[in-house]
Image 1 (cartoon, rainbow, N blue to C red):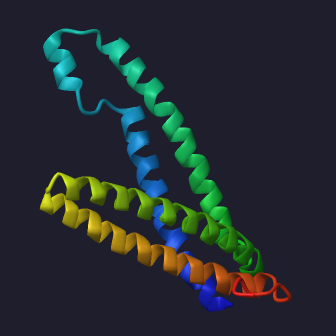
Image 2 (tube, one colour):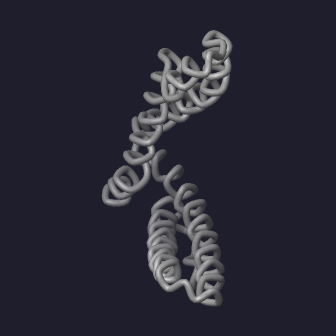
Length: 159
């Protein structure tokens, strides 16, 4: 059980917390102080106050969303292992579905670039297909392993 929780922490929670923290920090920085485009506004002679109000309004939703996401992720990190396994199972199922979508999208793009004979873009799409296929397989096995711990009496999906 501990191995599955550690896998979930390292593969899903810590990168998600890092991403939410980066988005929160950049949103907070943008909200509190002028950012990119300030010198251009001054150079064009536009109203700086109006520009700052628009910028704050645009970043405010992202700031709240990232703060709530960060709190939820930290709450999941602090859960007991048994509760975290329930969340992990649902997460692996969702990630498996998203990985299948990425695989389908990458294969469609590869087909498009193969028809146009753009070899470099085709190669990138084929690499994305390999990564997406590995992600589907990994998420599937993690979901199966987690399911065996969450619901021991349930049969395997191979039945």
